[in-house]
Amino acid sequence: MAKFKVIKEIKLDFLGSDWKDCYVKFVAPNFVDIEEMTKKVDIEDKSKGVKNAIEWLKSIFIDGKGIDMDGKLVEITKDDLADLPVEIITKVFVSLKGEVDPNL
Image (tube, rainbow, N blue to C red):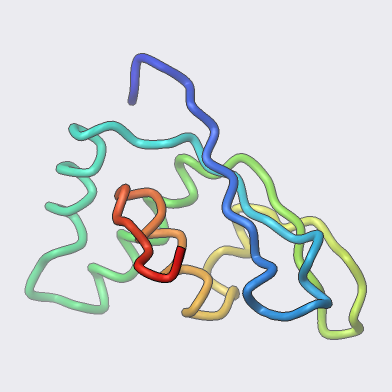
């Protein structure tokens, strides 16, 4: 785990106006963390790689807010991560890996 605790908040407003107050927060990983995660995810067994990716995200998850099926603002817990749309998980990985969004 990183020496410095940097909190990375990823806004979820790209999902629409209902999600304007929603976010997920993670402890930002360092290079060693990313390298270790990559070894666990980039494996031949893709199903296991996806499970490993979610487990890694759970280990650095702090908190979040989302909109449930009833349209209500609810807490997102680490156990909810696998239930989030793939679009959110993809954005989380891009953001945590420090990749630059060309749309910014």
